[in-house]
Length: 286
Image (cartoon, rainbow, N blue to C red; front, side, top):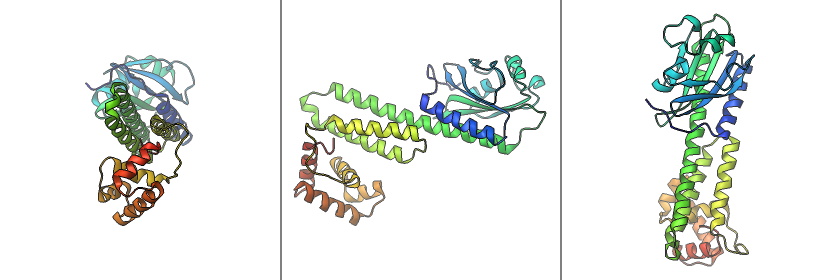
């Protein structure tokens, strides 16, 4: 079995799911939609669209039980038509499902690195066969939630690792700490570029700014570098060549060299190393 112990869906991911469920409801693909996060071997339903009662609210689904329980364990969508009499699932929750009027149901798991983190459901109140298109739309919602969770996990991992580095550093570890901060800062910038959810992107940007503030000197810098110049110089501080920087930032080597000339002139530096030293002194890069 693959599920995560003690971790419900983060608020920013739940917000994304709720928005997607409302959109899907308006499309008339499903009559009722709901979702929840996995904590231990159980699924906790928490978000709903199109429900007519409170019978599903707060319901806890056990692994292997019902359509959602199967989806948790098997890590694949589970479709059930004629829910009340279906033999493909257990009927632990038939009272709640039928009380909501649901006759057909599909449960799509939210999978992150082969671990089930939640389940998204779509139900029909009519005796109508579940088509491939609506099921695919539901799986798309689960996939988007999985992507946001993976990003959230990466951000949290970077923050934990950075916190441990900073807390364990002494005066002689300045270089190691600066390198860790820079690596995390650049990684978060790359992650933010691939994020569609505004709330999650805003959180990443806030973390980026917090990382930069860790090494900012009193009074602020006296030199202004453009965002792209800062990106180039940050990679230089990690020992990257112009070709490597160009590959990371999707720039030509000549363009990277142009940025280097400009930023070195601004910093009054004659070498790459001197540029990094001066930029760090001014708090422009970690």
